[in-house]
Image (cartoon, rainbow, N blue to C red; front, side, top):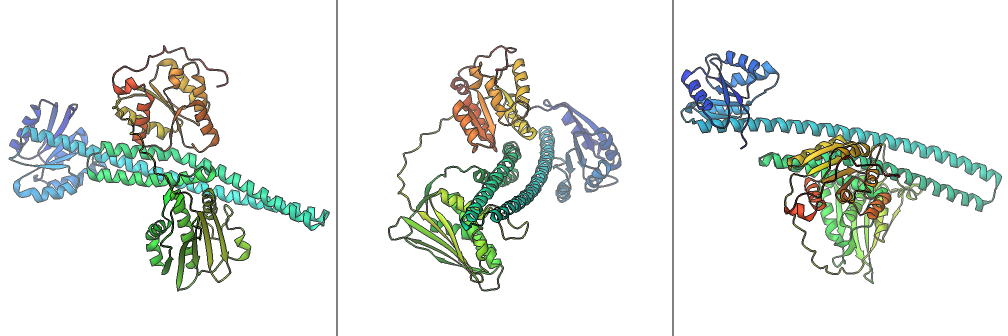
Length: 593
């Protein structure tokens, strides 16, 4: 363990010989310069604890005026919070009391008569480490609590924006209706009135979709920054904090943040459709797994599920996560419809294949209240919902339709009021997948340390997380909140790697990259950080320049791997120094940057 600075130790013990032994052991230790102060009674010890603020407290369990448990209870009352670790001194007969004291805030205990200088030193150092780790965990908990508050505030903002958008749509619809009345008054021909109505509906749908995509893209982009911080901090917590319990907590944080990341990705997918990842999917197995997740909810609401699955159903070529999303939406909608009627409540899931074995069908049928004819033509519209305010976004069936159309499939509904509803999905089987050749082995990178890295980002939490990670790996890190200040940094020194956000005030990442046109060696060591790789403009820029990028939120391993890949092969292999450094002070802005 790295030698610590000098430490002040408060020894509270009414036994003169025991105090002398501890002081003698510590004063002679070669690794740490210990300063020992002593107290005979608990009252005197609390006074010194308050005034001297020691680095560690050695406390005898049996004092003339109080025992160790009472002393520990009085510490927060004196200082409002425990400010240093505590090591207990106990006899053989007092070990049960020592264990009780450990539950009250002490970090460790030693049995008198079995103490050596090395054991005492190691116990003090371990107690200090445990105490500081507990403080670090408390700080992380507070940070996560603040992030949760921010996420809730943004959810409320999204709800408010959604309500505003709905109001705008209502106002636009009213305006279009007025225009239709004026047109009908001027021209009574039925054909012209129908044509105008179709044009109005198309305009309304285009405006609604455009507004929805813009809103979802902006919200998803803003959420990616705190998610990147949470994932980075969780990775660092798992690496720095010993013990399985801390690792389990960090893993739970990572799993929750990864779930949020998937939701954000779904929002981006809805705002920027992209090609799906196709693999062979057994629809029957996927249905069984989905029902297994939802079964506790069904059981609580007395909903019976009947399966009529074709045992010889061929596989389909599909994106398994997207098809699972369709299943969850359809099954959940059927469950919610059944909760509106009295028992018996039953839904039926049926799969079958056509005679040519080129098309499969899935039907989700419920015996709920049904869908009125006036609503059946609108249920696939974005933001349209029959649920009460706050119970649904109106995006589920619209998203399902988009996913299925992207797979070359269809979805339709049949229903009568009071007779339930049936949603029918049809998907092509597709060609049998060809066995792919084994993927080439991924290149193994040796650890890289001691590089000089510039981080350019206007999000303070991302800056802090990346800086902590990179400095932990032994790198020198400078930061700048935008491209303009990053150019000032480049006037002062040279850097091995530049990590830059894409969207920033004053001068964005693309402008910063263009300003480095006369320094191709810097461009080769430039990495973008972005939360919207589904944007056509963003991907066109990346493809045109050939620059590397990291998608927010990212993990610690991804950051390390990208830095290793960015550096020249000789540097990451440890065979050569960093690339030649240009002289600082020669950076000039390129026109058009």
